[in-house]
Length: 123
Image (cartoon, rainbow, N blue to C red; front, side, top):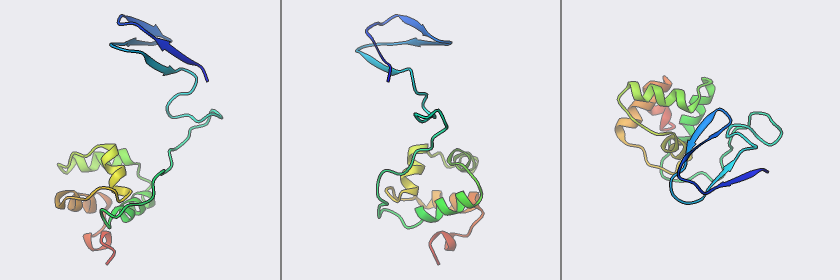
């Protein structure tokens, strides 16, 4: 891998992108873009942690989202239209059953995924 170490506070240009680095050393991995794996193909991140026990609907949310071919960002957009502002990490934790779900999020998830709240609860 090709790592570059920068010790500057002035702007510099890296390819077509202009960076401004403040403070201490920054490490930039210039050889592998964020959404590409080492072979050059697009790689998806897989779940690294075991499923948790903080909610019981996380697996159902993932199942319903995948059945509809919906990406997490698309679900988040639907939730935002319903007045629920959630981040990508928060949704990942919810789907991984590592984060509890509020009642407002619960109803909005059911509406966005076009499923009943009973189905999300596994009834």
